[in-house]
Length: 389
Image 1: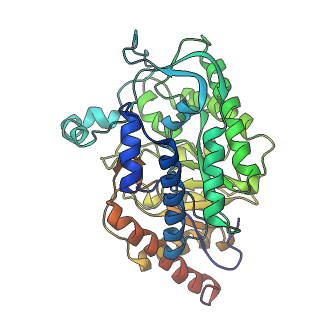
Image 2: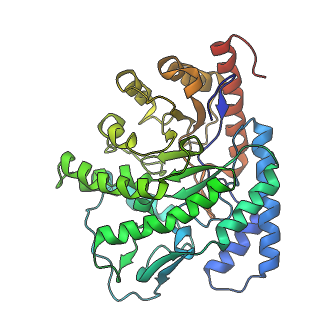
Image 3: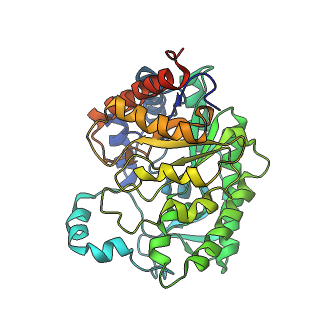
């Protein structure tokens, strides 16, 4: 979608879950029984509510809040046969990368910060011990819920990229990193196609592509990192092959935590990788203090014809609600570089990092989305010389 007669608005995906849904998900994570019918009813109702809230805030392209997912990436482990969780894994996966440079430089901060992140999510112990195959029941449920909530209005759904899906899964079956990667890509293609075939815009989430750079360079060189990332983009493009570009977009960020981020690789150093992804849109951070200047990259790098940018003009890393005039300023300065029709105003990242934790307080999220909507209306007036329709 292009902003043909006004600046369209969207966001990155994950929103805070309502209390009753969180309670049932917590029971699931702790292995306690949950009434399946009650859960399905609660989920469908919550999706309907969150779509109405987004529409009320002025969001043109809403989603289901990722409510059908426990987390933006590990949800996929419950949708793929061949991946299981061992309560006491035999051995921890040998990492091919080091601790991030941010964590090395600010170790004292992270020691305190990590204490605030307690969650019942089961990140550890996942292994691939058989051939990967995709199970469609959960995505079809999510599709049905979003369709019921949207009616004929446009919407999007998120899905994880192969690189980010594999993070912290130990391969005990394929014995080859690339075979494992492409097997995951083939599974994800089923999910991608189901979302697009349902009439939604597919957003592929891939924070680990950028996030790994600061863990791998050094000892890797930037050239070696580009080679590593190139293989992962090749796998993603295989999963995307044949899907209509205008119904796909790619989200890349540097991780959602509100820490220093001083070692984030600059967008200018990886924009060539981003543009290799065969999607019609690119969702990138542009609002937080570490990356808000990077709209200027597009003064030197030409956005390919037919593509759109979804810049973050609202930050997920602060509870401060951005002033709509600032939002409008962020939109118009980029629109004046790449063309107003090629900008869809969005957020830096999801507001809820998983079903149990949100970096922005749930009571504030709606105000931030409303600021996004109002800022887009102000930008529309400036860019088109009239009020938005």
